[in-house]
Length: 385
Image 1 (tube, helix red, strand yellow):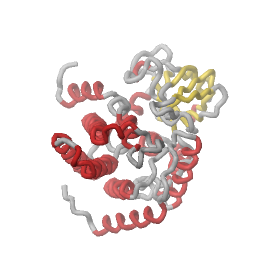
Image 2: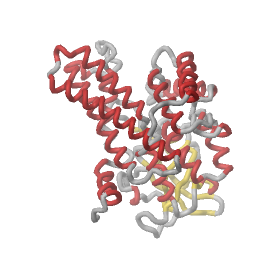
Image 3: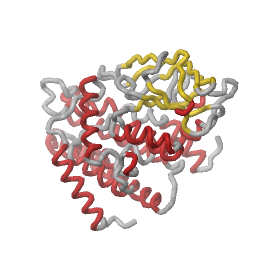
Image 4: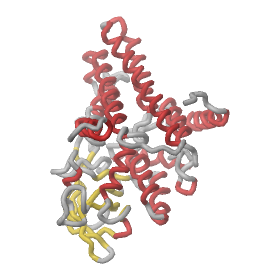
């Protein structure tokens, strides 16, 4: 792997840096887990899309820039360097978008991808159910075929972005006699259909980052089925691979956290034990290691390779690294680490507690780390089940 960027790549970086420098909001946006913040983030995404930067590796006709994955990594570095807002539609652009690219019909790609890139339509992830969290093969929500519609009944819970989203993607049991991985179909459902009830769920910080979604004889057009009927597990595993592996968590995210952690340590070094210093150094090294591994993966993909079960290694690494970096920040801050961003005495450090509360979920979402270790032992190490 050659880590030297070409002249064209350096030019792409300079163009991205200049555009972001001219357009990133001067003041932080409200949390997109609030109604006002969700509106602000949609407006930002529209600006990003207007500049051609919403999803740089997508084809131009679908709202992208036609860039390759190496250029996407470069853009992500510049995006975090500029302190640009979080992406409200990350479930759409980073997870569902690539899945539609792989499994969608030409009509589905043309219908959904441009509005996804602009965040005119924000997508909700509808995996979990009351008795099907990490065990998605236990999904019970049914979608029974009735002519050119599915009749959907059941419940999804912990639906990410559910409180302010427009569409939900998830798996539904289209064969009620089937069990486990069989008889499941991947379906896209607009949340304004009659019979759908969305009930927000508060996070630890009190904001509605999730929702329960109830389906009561909801008629979803069959044309919103993604992939073949009964083959939803295969489609969903492709989506999960994007979630655990390359797209959802670019290395720039963790490099940025590691950089801020080093700055925080330096500002408080006189009051911090040497052991904390060593841990901070390990975290910075971890973020750099994850970056190099991601560049290696992208190089392999550009050469025609694919991402497989090793995405589980990525997921464990970045989720535990993210959590440890935020734990260290709170240790360095001491009592100040208990302050949320809106606290009068936070003085700019409240983002660490906010980030820590979110990082706690990292080892759980995208498949719990316990499940990922099972996948690694079976599929990568060849150990018995």
